[in-house]
Amino acid sequence: MSRPIRGIAIVLGVLLLALLVNVTIIQVVLAGDYRDRPGNQRILLEEYDRERGPILVGSDPVARSKETGDTLRYLRVYPNGPMYAPVTGFYSLIYGATGLERTENRILTGKSALFVVDRAEQLFAGLEPRGGAVTTTVNARAQRAAFAGLRGKKGAVVAIEPATGRILASVQSPSFDPNILSSHDPARIRTYYTSLEADPAKPLLNRPIVSLNPPGSTFKIVTAAAALASGRFTPDSVIPGPRAYNLPDSSRKIRNWNGQACGVNNLVSLREALAVSCNTAFAWLGNELGDEALRTQAELMGFDESFAIPLRAATSRFPEDPDAPQTAMSAIGQFDVRATALQMAMVAAAVGNSGTTMTPYLVQEVRGPDLSILQTTEPVTYAQSMTPLNAAQLTEMMVNVVDNGTGSNAKISGVRVAGKTGTAQTGNDNPAVAWFVAFAPAQSPEVAVAVMVEDAGAPEVSGNQLAAPIARDVIEAVLR
Image (cartoon, rainbow, N blue to C red; front, top):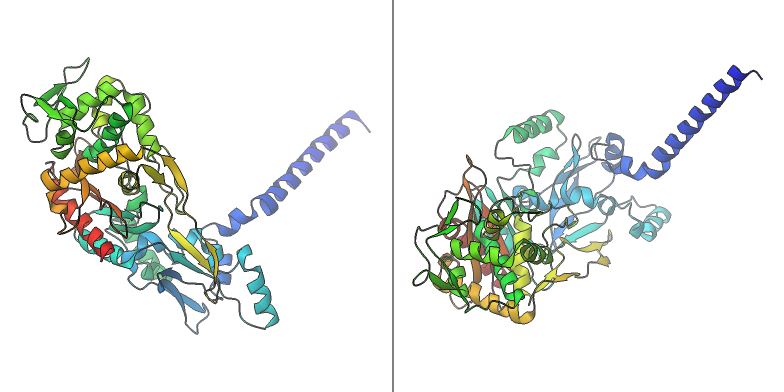
């Protein structure tokens, strides 16, 4: 064989080998990814020919299938669709699936390995294949209270059971109607989806777990926890609380939201500083503790980690290497600190759970077509973020916020409520975001709540005016 022919043969051999490797990767390694990719029309059409299992809140379906008698045999319907949209997502002939409809697709279609026995029984009995059911952790009363509270506002609410990490509510506003996106009318689906995408309020954004905003003064809970962990401070420690705090190595100043000094003679206890949300005291405290201490405490409570609940949540973050002025701003939840509503609910829940941060989750059980339980999610500890003693002290400090400080609108008759207000600017030209985080200590059942309201206006009190009443209503709904 001549040298040119041999060279061509080698090249062709390499190309053939590359083709075989590529085909193997696509058909074997990536087959599942291509199969489950949203918008895979062939798989969707196959799935429309079988009864898809329900998504349940308690024993009630918030997503279910009904028979149509048409070519597309089953139609997905969502009772109270907009209320549960952040949880269920949608199941669309055109746009594929989102939310639990996507992450739990193999359960809902009955194709999961958990259903091998069920599929065999259906085959031998000559029965049509049916999907399994997914039972969520959502508390219907909490979800309803959060949805009602956000009506007419733009924002998100997340409620968590502190001892387990079970997500009791996940609500956004504005929301969307998954019934339209899951209809069998392609033109109507496209028109509605296009309008949602064009809406500047971003109703398709899963705000509770994806929207990142500066947490503002609610982050002072993290700073206070770091102060207690240092061993240098107690709730009664007296710290500077002047009208304005000069940022180190800078001509800039941090001022208090009410324009006044905190405490007496510019000195205030840590307990009182949290109650009145004293910016200057916590900015000073942040510089005393340093960015490493703040970051360590934040990460123990879930920052800088991406959680799959199983929906993938955005990663809340603390700045990597802030200088002294940036550390002071970070200590009050400004600069580049960013958090989701899920994250700030985790912060409150960690304090309320004696300092133990739990991994959040949204799916409680997987059930077979006959609703028999096949799999149950067990709570998982994420980190011990505080000692029980420090958590108890911080709990009392947060109760003082509600009883005697900026969180008065979260009061519930006969119930002790621990909370913290917050307001943060999202940019030079953007309106403020109002926050309130809260939990009810020593109550059964337990609940921790984070409320985030966008376009809130500037004053610190907007957290108390706009967000605290929603948190209060959600807590009351769970305790009823």
